[in-house]
Length: 270
Ligand code: KIV
Image (tube, rainbow, N blue to C red; front, side, top):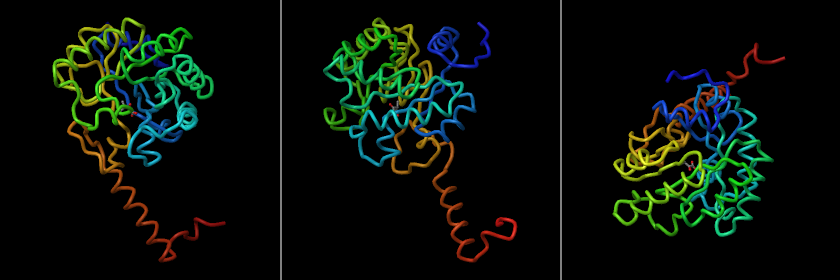
């Protein structure tokens, strides 16, 4: 099947990419300027992740970020995006244990940010919330494996589903999410063989982060892959640039020029 030229990525486009075996590229973004740059490259999906809690707000976990803060980030991103599908994380506390609250949270995201879809962490324990959100016509992306909103339950950021019990639950949750109507699924930090099994078992696209190459696409946190964040170095992370150093050099050059009255020069004033 030949890839058609796409002016706007939709859930349908992602489904066709899986059928064709074409890999899906996904990155996070949290603000207008970065989203505009990332979208201009032809990326397929932009995730307004609750990792904004870490990389934007400096929290140690994703738990503190609020629905209002996610909507602020999401609406900044959608103003910069023309082509990519924009997916927004429902933050911790906005959907667990109360499907009506989940629906209200998802509707607020869609209405106030003009996003294309939402993402929720978890399997059978949040299925009522997913069903209710889907019933309003809102596309849902699932997220299984290392689900950072449950870090206090896990007690560690180690690889998930290495034992057979957790692996079996993950496969059955993945099938449940697909059968319920999720349009795609993120698998985070699980053994590559297990991720491959899931990608083969479900018809929806499976996007991996630390889940090996035999899935339907990959996602990374933008600030990690650009080398802006320095303290986070899991094995699965490939740094494509060292922007941290480049930014420091540019700022140091600016400081030098200001101190030496080299900036502004004659042409840089009125
Ligand atoms: O919040 C996030 O950035 C995510 C990705 C790591 C998948 O959920």
